[in-house]
Length: 145
Image (cartoon, rainbow, N blue to C red; front, side, top):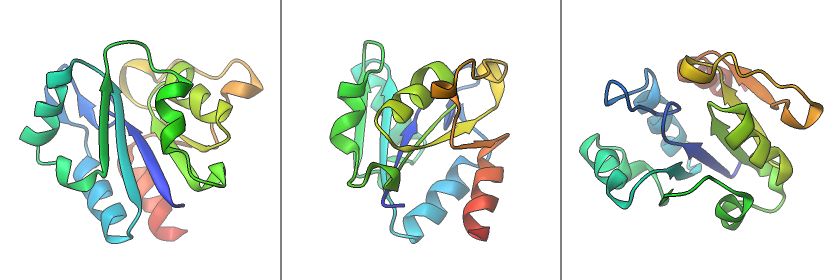
């Protein structure tokens, strides 16, 4: 694992409560200590980065990128390492981050939690590499790997 591309909304940040998702800080701290390059990609307005700064998370990411349109392979592809499987794409939506990560050949991690937890894979192309019910469960997996 060389790099992890995180989705923002409902993966690390809950826009409804305007708070971080449980386990986000602990996970990012751990990955930073492991010298894993972290990238944040999300859908949002240019001022969305102010939430990242306000919550003290900007220090963990080498790049932060928000787009006003739907996420696409073009947005993710500049951040993919060689080999692509050394890049992890972490998100809460099968039909967004997970399918894009799969199309780019990355390792995909579905955080099956919240609003889109019932959006299950319907084709092999949508099947994530790993599935966890929380960021904390993902952290436990990383520590035991």
